[in-house]
Each structure stands twice: as C-alpha cells, then as structure tokens.
Image (cartoon, rainbow, N blue to C red; front, side, top):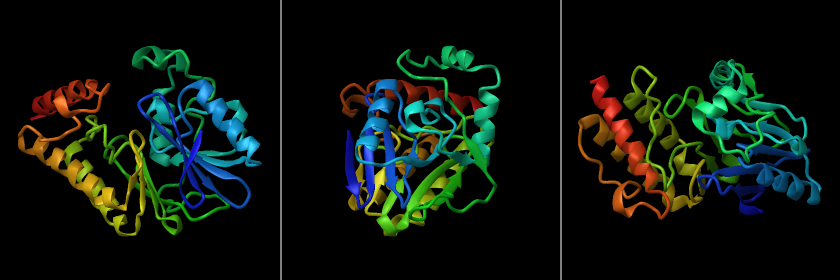
Length: 265
C-alpha cells in the first residue's frame, strides 16, 4: 500500500526490517527508489502503480546491499541506476552467482532474485538522477557502503537517506573502508548541508520523520559514531532495553561493530 508523505512522493513499507520503497511522481512515470524486498510486496507495488495509471520511468538503488538491489518483472524494464561505485560493487559481489550470495547472507526464500543487482552505474560525479521529473540531487558518500547515496528532492522538501538516519537502526559503518569512522562523520556533514530545506525524511529502514526529526537524527547518529570513535559506551535508545520491540537483534550488530573497530585499533 502506497502512503503519501509529501507532494508527489509516496512510501511503500515492507515487512522486512521496515524497509521503505520510495515512489516519486514525474511527468512520464515515476522514479522508484529501493524498490522493495518480498516478492508479493513488489508485485503489490506494481499493481498499485498500474491501477493508478502510472508506470515506472526509472529506478534507483541507494547502495549495493542486496535488499536495495531488488526488482520485479511487473515493474517493467525501466533503467535502474546507482552511483558508479555502487554498481561496480554490486557487480563484484554478484560475480560468483546470485545463489552464492543468497546462501552467504541468508536472503529469505520469498525474495525474488532473478533481477537482483541489474543496475547501471551513473558517471562519476553525476549530480542528479537522469529522469523526466523533479530534480533529484545525488549526495554520494562512503559511510554505510561503497557508493552509498542519499537523495534530496529539493522542490518537494524530501530527503531519502538510504540506510542512515533511522529511528530503529543505529549507524552501521562500512568496516571494509580505510577509515569508517571519518567516512561516516563526513557523510553526516554532507547530509547536514541540505537539512535546512528538508520537511520529510525517509530512511531506508524505519519510520518516516518530519522536519523536527532531521537534525535530531543527524545528531543522534553523530553521537553514536563519536562514542565508537572515543571508545565510550553509546547512550542510544536504538540498542539495549529501550530498542523497539522485535529489534533487539540490533544490539548484537552494535556489539559486533564495536569488537571489529577495537580489533582495528
């Protein structure tokens, strides 16, 4: 079910980790950002668009993690984009075959994999998503994954944050990077640079936030990363007893992250 969150912008929420697919209306179709996860949900989204007389003009994956690289045949054959680094990373990770990736990361059976990762990398330094609709600014950084992109739809006042600024997931750093802490802090600085014009924040996982949530979530993410950097125990409601019901596993991710950063030191 599509839920409007701003003028011409709707969200389709998945049961899988409260994942958010974003639909932006254009002049000759919609831009579909991070299409979704479970097969029946993707088919439902395609049906909702069809019933409203809309087709998909373009797709965009915010980063190269499997749950952001999915598609469904019913959505059509529109071009699917990502940053150059995102697309290259997806190709590399899928080079051994989709089945191997599915087994390695434990992709659920109800996820359709036949169109996984078939995205086109935009030329490096591309500033906007190429499509016939409102300008969608690409804010590329290396915080959560190689070639991760937040998208700012300035005329609609919407920030699509990818896997950042979530109310249920604390920052999950790309621990394969040379300096994951500084990468994350730099990305938060880039996002903060556009925050003043944002009325609606859409994270990759979690609840959509209003303008009062944008800076609050930036500050919360920054405080968590600072605690990791300084070797302190984060005071963060997303981990520990205060975590949202059903999200207690996030504390385990935090502990693993803390351990790996300690090993790097």
